[in-house]
Length: 540
Image: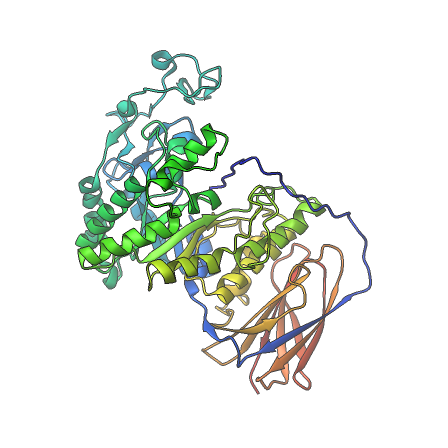
């Protein structure tokens, strides 16, 4: 889910006026199919909670069952606790069948060609409901006193915040929850293997080690009021990963699923300490563990634990990332739209200073790869939650297309958008142009190749060769809000005469826009402002 943190740094704003249409900007794009060749992993085109229709239409390779509510999912009762997202209420599904909600999720994923990613709770408590499947809640007003807000449908269910702004403390975690350890969750993994088969025989392949543990003291403070420590996340991850592998040795474990930039460096305990003490220089938990940052320390310890156990305990190292400068909402002012398209540089550009309170060079995907190479070689990397906002605007579409192109070019192994965009929106269409542009399974290529543009903040481009037929596929994204672009594509190492073209523009669905001649290894086309164009160049 979308997370923000204020750490005393100013938000940097780049304001652009509305502008007006100008003469088309000429953009030279240089593509060389012989250079920078690397495989594009199809799992980067993942989503979260997509329905069956979207899974089939977008040809999603993975569908993630994640988020805050999964941290306290009780598979035995088919119920969960919603935590801070909704008054710490515990609700049961209408169907009392054990694991029913997730079994339906798995069924839809498998029926439509997607691999389900299932979150296994590690927090130690899961939601509990009444014997008649009635809801329970953690912060009763009658029991704990007046609170700032209450559930509109249940006035005794408070939000756990006193009228003076202080959190209710000392509550009984079993008011709306029940203890659940690794043995409890082992029963669930056994249930899924029994129902769906082992991972290597068509069962569940991916198990996520909970969700954003360093935020438990906020999102799930009814059962975990103190910030999660480094020792706690390590012990939980080792214990639960070992349990999963004992039931299904071929399953892939995924973690630590942390929420955002501060959580790459500091544990939940240190984040809590910083929030309460105006972010001093020291970090007690980190200092007590040799001063190593959270993410590389975690990888070091998981590698050591794997060696001791005689088997790999972490298969995919995953983080979450959301832009923090206002891009992730519904604000579609020109300034935000421009920043939305610029800020994807935080995913890959080592020179880009993030334009928010982060105020640092995030360089996320190369940083993750460097951490893994140095601290746990062979581990895959994934960004399993991201969302840049603007879903109903073309800037939401151009940024989504940009992100998927970056994921492929930079060699990310797994990516899951939060959640699945609504059908017909520019973001949905942007995902579809990579996976099913013609409605017949037409897709972007499998091998990323060199594609150089003069300024990716104005026009970005990504190129790949398709293994099935040898076609060269090129996606060109005109991010400019008001100006057309005259693009000249030079194709080195690839002989062709014609290219078919598909385009998203004006908020409309993908449309075929005919063919383009390729002469002397060059292709020229005028592209509208805020558009996404796919060229499919057949080999000579």
